[in-house]
Picture 1 (spheres, rainbow, N blue to C red):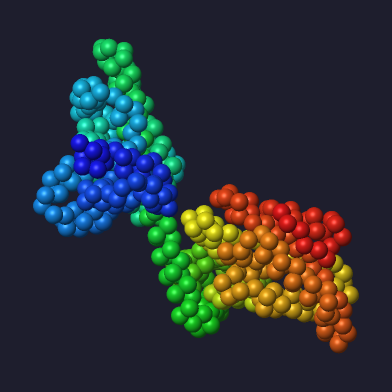
Picture 2 (cartoon, rainbow, N blue to C red):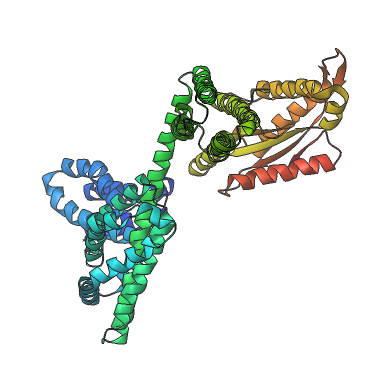
Length: 547
């Protein structure tokens, strides 16, 4: 029987190259190389191979059902049975390949079954000791202890870990979908509660050590003992990998959601929010001063941290300005007021009333400092909300990692060119020295305007440093990027700029250009452009160099 007529042979001929060829583009090339058009069974296998890739079995099953079964069901009855045989065989081979338990797959089925029994017996016999050792160590761990308590461990977590251990080493990995779903679910839970992934890996290492000790204590053949150790290690590592992948995906989704809500919250009218919190701060300070005047020594002063303003800083402000150094400065001033200034005033009221006036001055200075910090943090948020540098209207550098990271991924996936340009204003310090910062601002605005007029709407222009601009030229080769940068350079050298004193001066710029060469780190691409810019500067300025 020919390969065309035999679904099993056709499976080996079609699906084999597909599973090894990687990306869809290469898979299509493999299919186009067939001398004969595939039969109905072959069509099923091609789609199955094309949707599988190197995904987990859980993803594979979903894509298989979505893409393959409709074709499968459309086959003529005479093709159904042979196609089914080839389909199931290909699916089993693909799933085994995706699980990537290489050592486990290399062990004979009989020996795997023996090891499963050994490991299952160890876990069942020692599961309580393993759970106790695991949580005993983590309750003493300075970082992990913040996620745990004795009551939570006893009421919920011990039971969960016990169940996970019992199922882990006795799982049917020939049909790994349920095993994978369970690990993925656990990883998603860890992401939701923000449990650091390194703590999970540390816990897995502890369990492997304890189980490994039990294996070493067994009176069994040394070869079987080694097989048990290797299989146990590989299975736990695979579970950790699935959890970690799910954790990263979940954490990324939560981060996107948090950022979207943060920007939405800021956009609810940032001016009103700023004035509301200024008023809340002033209301607290007036209440404190009124208490000092009317109830000297008879009433404990309300802390700023528990006031409406303090609650806003701790909760809503913590979300809106997460990670901002200004927020940390505000929190530090609040702490200083509550733990130092107010207690000192309370003490002075009782023991040394003459010192109260000086301490009130200290309190008012701290409140004034908070007012300035509040203005600065809202101003920074307004600029971030707009996403643009307020002087040049180019993009805020904060967004460069997201933009350039995404463009590198697109260039890699679609095999399209990508170039980065760094442009620096020559002798900018001399311009500032001669015309002051107002003159420097005029030059920067005109440089930015000319760049924005030269690039396409699909490109990205960032204010990269003081007088540096970074341009991301999408789907642009090195040759075309050099040509565009040269046009920018020539326009400046050929035209004067009108300065604030109505005088005119010629401003030149230098450029460095680099194109994506397959390196996945966007910092590497920027570094090459920066090195090219440095060579332009060293070579006499007013020139463009390729990196």
